[in-house]
Length: 136
Image 1 (tube, rainbow, N blue to C red):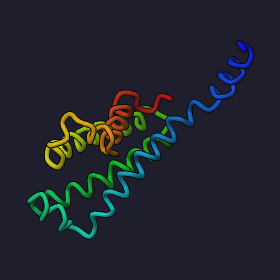
Image 2 (image 1 turned 90 degrees about the horizontal axis):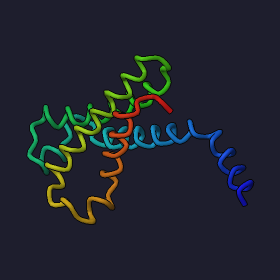
Image 3 (image 1 turned 180 degrees about the vertical axis):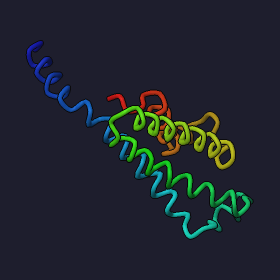
């Protein structure tokens, strides 16, 4: 049994770098989609539902698209700059998600809605890339 477990562990250790890549692309694509769905600018839904100014609503949409793109681009730059871009994207995601929790979902603290929503996983993904950067 120990030999079987070691073979399984050895097999999957060859794919460890892919785990971060899958997470990176999943988080990035989600932010790209969320941001692009707010176009054309200014996003009327944010303005009407949350009473945001047109400038702030546009800033949110542009930031979501930018952070998705930065997360992808940062992953392809294999030097300290790429690591920095990834960490900045992670930091921005964390800040965005905290604001989303406070402004849009303040009734979610702390209950099952929070932990069964996509937002908590986007927040955790942002934390992951803020802390880990490009290190796989």
